Image (cartoon, rainbow, N blue to C red):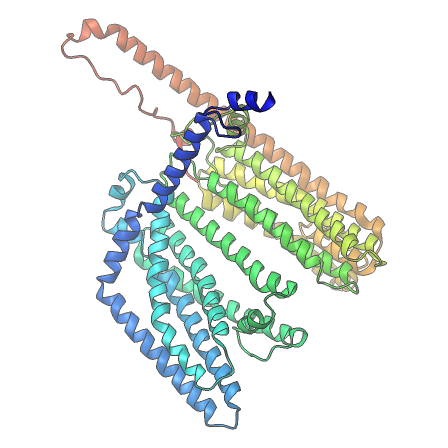
Length: 592
């Protein structure tokens, strides 16, 4: 009886068969997915055809490959002329090849990608690109994929040169595969960084120059950091390779070890993905018109960055060791606290009002509530960032405390570590909220995001340096015992939560947590004052704009009422009823 009723209740007479509505939704979803996969990005096709027809790119391809091959051959010959074993020579040649390829990527990729959007502006095709009907994400994605694919061709051209290392031995194809994987991991954020610069700047020369100026020192720091990490990992992991591409040996021989897999594979994947996502979100904000929403991509990115950082922090807690986990946990917690500071600076850049071209009406009461309270605009974005900052510090404290008790239940300094991270989280929350509300208020008043960020960060550094300099003038020896007692004037510094956390982690004294009340009260009250002023400013601008719109509507209604007497029926007056209103300079200014 039940089987018959089930079959009768299901269309088609078979139990468990999907309903026609569910089947239609599934088929439409699959159809949209296939259309996206099969629909080639026109920006990608256009850029690739243009690049492959450019003589400069072809010349760079064979000239760079030739110079790289000569350099690798010269290095291998110099190493082989000595008394070095052939296997060691092969490893040195391997490091020379991939290091030179890495330098080429770091220097060339940002500069190459920095021309992709500025060239559209200088060629006066940028407006046509925006009017083509493609959204900002499709344009940015096409530019990114085109630059990435063209530089991938360079790596393909470089690939045969690494065969020189196989003549000497000491490496395996797996090492080469992981080496090229590392190059791809570096190539993606370099290209995304160049695309972000290209979307923000208007001159190709300025974009290339700025890309080179920023990528060169960052590349040197990155390569030296890789070498240092390799030297630190050689002893515990028993590695033999020297150089920045030591991780190829680690992944080739210890891939399934949890510490190697997490630190050398999963952590770089997270860092690369969060960097590429952020740069592409910045490029989308630069491509979108000022009247559209520019903050939502950053909000989605911030949630991913926060969750990934908390997971990484929890994993790091498991490998620091029980001997010094109290000081190390405080250090890693303080390092993770720079992310909320970045959130505070990032989201203090919203115009006072939401975009004049709103997105489609959100479905559901929760989405409408989110769009009204935490969506685009200065006040809603400030609320979102404030919740994000509080959640970040609560998550950091929770991960450090729970991770310490979970991984090291027999450790004797749990109270010290817990008090240190609580002091830092509470104090740094107040500092970040003050920076956020002050920067957002400056953004609304000055109507300039760059000036607001510069002034807000400058005020933060001023609050940091002024007490430090005064304390040094009064008594320079007061910093010798910073871990036991913080100088009185340093209590008003934004670094007070960090000093207090380090002191508690080193010397103990859980009762010192109350010392964090001074910066909490100072920066908390300042942040609350700036927030109230921001809400009042936004509310006054909103009322002015609403009054202007109401006045405009009254004028339109009056003109409609007079239309029969002012114009014949065959020639009616066409009024742009759907055009956006002309707002004053302050309320109508809408940029991210």
